[in-house]
Image: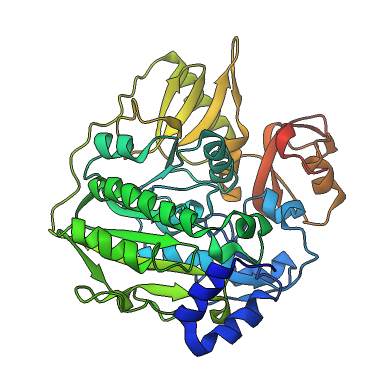
Length: 449
């Protein structure tokens, strides 16, 4: 790995005698990991995944993946949303944020969705997750991952942080800013990050990070928690950004991270105890991460924000009837037609006009001439026990492989109508059954090759 001379000099000054160990680690293969999605699967039965994994210290449901030969994207468990491929130390920021069920949480820079889907698992279907990504193309990837992981209480948007600050001022209990950075912690797995690095790029990132933090601070209620994180090692993007933010926001204070993994941040200030921040280097078991937990002064509740206006008509009634024909439980939100589609909107969803929202809640289905066609997302958000009709297959079965490939499959003749398809009890899609055959509804863009 040909590292920039200035980067080497910076790291030598930062690490001192530890630099030799850092350099040795940087010439080893990068660390791989997966996170179990507890919305759809239990870590207690992780042996069922049949993957070479072992526990990592950064998150309760996080694991190291001890093989370079395993293709997670082709795993039926990946298709089912039971697992998410995620670098282990990247899980640390959400652990430090510590979201709780019932809270309203904003992930300001959310794509591709690793930290957002981790927050959703912690919320366990209660409260509201708002996942934002300014770059529209990346926001579409974020939305796809939110759907795959079966998240019911999420709003996905593509808006400038300033716009969110205007429309959702003081609304959130917790905010995560996993800021765009120079990516030094990705050097082992991304040669392009090495090629793109320069001191000027790092300095520009620090300026942008402070701008994003200013917007995030406005979105947070009094007494709320803001976690700032990066996947870089640079002082200027980590401790120095935190100190500059605190200088400009006297209503915020730095507080302990509350975790034991990694190591304290560097003491870079006479005004603030920056050792309360947390760093992870490759010699600590991850690729590289930094996080700081900050609290806004005060104890008030979230600011009042107008609730989204829900209309109830014949289309919503038909959508409710379709839902009842597919699932045993009551809808977990408010059904509303928006354009040519019907959605199940989260109960805590505010008015979203002008906020670049791509999706609120779960897409129930699309309006056709005289009917509503249920969506893939609707079934991905369902649990096996909720389904009226469920065809479950073993992970290595021919039937499941054929289904994920987009083929029509044979099923028991007792299955009628819309039927969920599951990987050993974890829903991974649906089809329509008649006469012992299941006509496939697995989206073409998601099918295995």
